[in-house]
Amino acid sequence: MSATSVLYDTPGARAKRRNILYTIVFLVVFALAAWWVLVQMADKNQLASEKWSPFVTDSEVWTTYLLPGLGETLKAAALAIVIALPFGALLGIGRLSDHSWVRVPVGAVVEFFRSIPVLLMMVFASQAYAQFTNVSSDMRPLYAVVTGLVLYNASVIAEIVRAGILTLPNGQTDAAKAIGMRKGQTMAYVLLPQAVTAMLPALVSQLVVIVKDTALGGAILGLSELLSQNRTITANYGANTIATLVVIALIYIVLNFILTTFASWLEQRLRRGKKSTGAVLGVDGPQQVGAPAGPGGGGGT
Image 1 (spheres, helix red, strand yellow):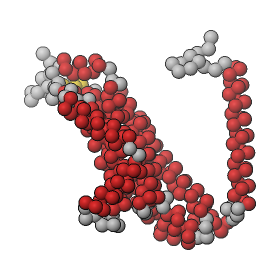
Image 2 (cartoon, one colour):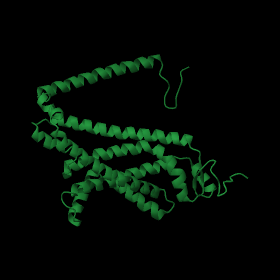
Image 3 (cartoon, helix red, strand yellow):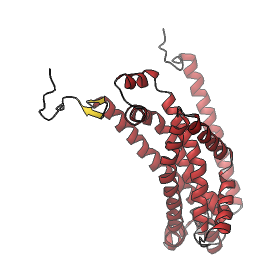
Image 4 (cartoon, helix red, strand yellow):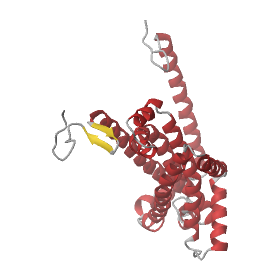
């Protein structure tokens, strides 16, 4: 009898042979496609060494264009993340409120901004800053990009937070009420800490989206982020568009890999902490098992 899991049956001998065959076919097709792409690039003189060598031999490509562009990307993404995470968490908690005068307006805000393309919000924000504020034209693209990213991603994060909390068993809330915890304490000490681990993969995916969406500001609003450096590099180094885009894509891959790797490490640490902790929950918050119950340290009866 073959072993089974929750999601699928363990493949037998025939299924394993089919999987191997599918893998071989895919690899052959992928290799042929890659070969065709390289042939086309060679015919267009895109594999010539002079188009790729500046990224290795000329440090000014990095110091003048790529690294400053990366800095702008990280600045816009960091500002958006720092604002969107707590804002989204508050919106998500607001959608779970028992009071309709809180729940309904917050739900309307979340659904409104979640439905509008982030690029459109960036354009609207840019025009609003130009018409109604004194923000300089140099800083306006950054402000507009961060505003659009915050409004859209905070709405998405709100839904992630709400869904993460709703996946917890109802017994968690009932137990907290049974020991006299108020709703704010239940949310802060019981629900959110447990939901964070479940939400983390979705949150990391959204943070990756924030990093990548900064490129919209460079394409439309003139933000000097990483992808927008393609135009200036191409103009100064002999129409090496393909090489430049490949290098920029690799930088994005490395950046997002670092982000996801850190998130995986954090998730594992949180899971280990939950398994090893000796904390219990009381009305005044978490307490360590075995800790003194009062000034005299007498926890026993």
